[in-house]
Image 1 (cartoon, rainbow, N blue to C red):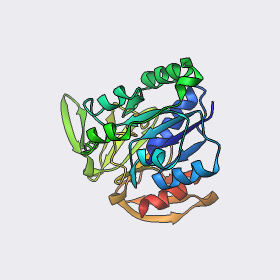
Image 2 (image 1 turned 180 degrees about the horizontal axis):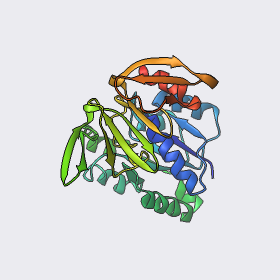
Image 3 (image 1 turned 30 degrees about the vertical axis):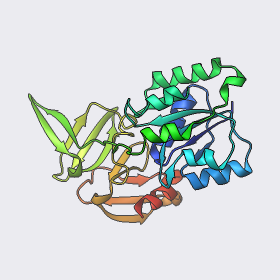
Length: 251
């Protein structure tokens, strides 16, 4: 089964790619914009299945289908509310609400595999769908964490966090005050909850806040070392495979 992901937020695309792999579905191609997707479909064999975000960085993903005739099954990944999703139900289009739940993803894949080839292709009624999506909702990202300190709950605003890291099977935030606090969530679970313009996952162990970066230094094996304003407990290294995306994120 040939599968691709079209998603403008690269961390979300990579998370979905990892989730699909756990279900033995390989999505080797990741596309991030309308323009890039159209160019890809013009020069490549179309896949069996597309996981497609609605709002891309350069427009609505429907523009891809308006430019190119695509006979692939489509599963939309979306942060739109239930009212807007009425349009998808009317057009017999499957969808997954963000942040994507593993059980719902597994069910969507099973449903796709259970359809006949004739049912797999989709004809979109763009006008009906766009009427319900003319005012896209603002995606909500986490604004603060509540952490337990003794018998108390402490609120930590997202802008007061320098980095989020994993250590000894725990996930911690490090604040501008130089304190560490244990979280209940894993780094993977936070991937769709953090504002992507503020936080970037530089490795399997670290998210960093762009406003906390003091210096960036060349490191061994084509990697980068980040110096943060206050965090000094261990080296903060950008994984080699993420260096290019990290540099794009900085800009």
